[in-house]
Length: 290
Image (cartoon, rainbow, N blue to C red; front, side, top):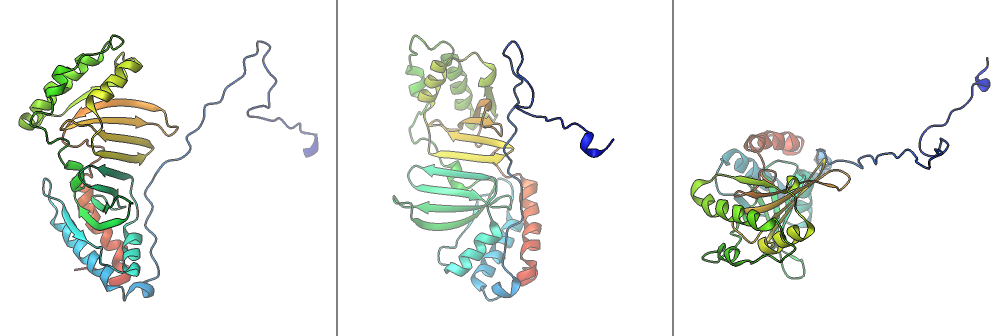
């Protein structure tokens, strides 16, 4: 038998005849991609040795990463006065990580975690989205993420006065559970999570919950194998957390009572590792930063 005598069999969608009953094999859509760590791109060492402004920033950042401690206030540096070349090098060294956030409240800002865990870029913006302040923060989350969601003396009072429409069946007990745990959280510091995915909620229930909790100033997106959307509500320490798979399908819908959901925070051990990783990145350019 020769090669040309072997019959060619085609495979895949469209290659097989249709079934007599009209039913065809359906193929599940495969994931389109995922976010993963990639080392930041930096220019050749001889191109950056004279960029002393960027070196000074890296000196500060190395010291801040070594100084950081759990539960400490964010350590900040304003790099707004760097010229374009030094700022560009800082951008290249830090790169973009998986977590980004927006703040729309008493101020407007956008925040981006770098490829180094616990190192954030925070840009304060004017009404036209021009950058007013360019900060580097070392923290588990940026300062604005922990800003109080409400300045009302009793932000939970309005929940007690709510009346559900007739088509809302199960939202009211959930709101009662949220209020009871959120009111106690500042004293007990005990996180609480409600898995809405497992509850029999109608579209009217979800819409009523969204209206009752409101949308606060903080909106966070964490990218990985799929996305996680974290929205701060108008109630203190109450967050709406939604997980999506890589095809954009909602797979987990929760409400969390906590200061900041863990999915947003940089882990303490990862922040401590960032100092060593930063040293490896900048060593070819300026040697080991002291």
